[in-house]
Amino acid sequence: MEICDVTLRDGEQAPGVVFSSEEKQEIAGLLDEAGVNCIEAGFPAVSTGELASVRAVASLGLDAKISCLCRAAAADVDAALDADVSMVNIFLGVSDLHMWCKFHEPREKVVASAMDVVEYAKDHGLFVRFAAEDASRTSMNDLLVVYTACENSRADMIGFSDTTGCLIPTEIAAAVENITHSSRLPLSVHCHNDLGCAVANTITAASAGAFQLHTCVNGIGERAGNAALDEVLVILRCKGGVDQYDLSLMPKLSSVVAEASGIQISKSKPLTGEYAFSHESGIHVAAMLEDPVTYEYVPPELLGRQRQFLIGKHSGRKALEYVLREMGITANDEQITRILEEIKARSEKKCSITFPALRELIEKLQK
Image (tube, rainbow, N blue to C red; front, side):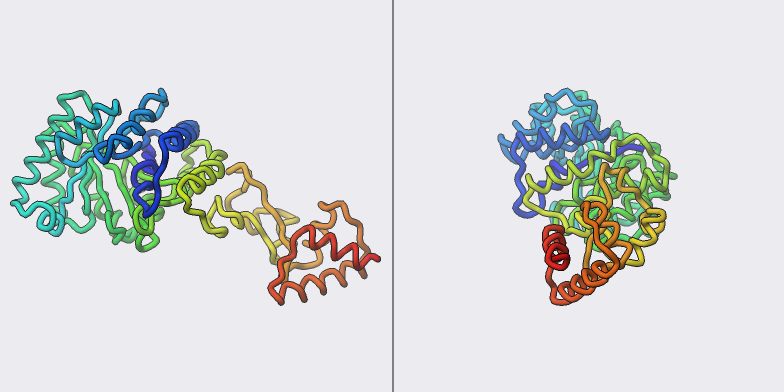
């Protein structure tokens, strides 16, 4: 199993997102440091600037394989060769809908033409992954015909793209099992998040036999985005025992990509969101002071983070006592009771209880 991160390509296809060459290089370096196996650096046929950016990433000498996106056209493969990548992702819309809307030609002719491009890329020494775009809305018989053509054309890997994010886990499991039982080539999966199932579908596909999993940092990408890198990796670690990736780099990657993309993540996003390891409820905090496992499945230390206890409307006495100790403040029982009452009163008026505000409140009460 391996991870192919497509942040620099599909992530950049999110509306309004453009990564500079320097940003692409920084993100690629962090992905490589985290142990990501393959990095899709961009779509060099888009522009001369994009080609130069992909070439810059390819020249970094990273351990990860550097890939780029290509249409089923020889000119796109030439651009990939110019960018000096070692791997190409040649894609073709294979559903009846895509065939009709894009090509207006018989399926057999379109597929045969695409296989000529696969052969062309192989003849030029490239590792070729052939991605079936809109595979999730393509009949299994048509998909298997395309994948057989890929084998005959010497492709190294085949891809299944849930381009519109229309599948749920049971559906992608059935598709992946069928494909892996029918084809000798390793299968990659590319899941979009339109129904909120991208991460679940990606993990399910891995369980069903998919070899390469596509991800994006922060789950960015077209429309609702793609499977989030950090979430896929943590699930693989916690549920599958996959221990080959450095999860402590996920917060830094998240921050760098958020800054470069201009897309800030939700505070409640799993794992890298500001509140992912924050606790306010008094019942929760009291139990966690005994053992954090009571209300945390993933230890924050796994991602190089720390849990924090916040003070607000739902805070209890034990939580407040703990926070006061951490702040180096001593208060008697009566003061703690009055502080809690004031905290709850302020919180119900939607006033945030920051630590400076808490310190000011305590000093006022103690006077």
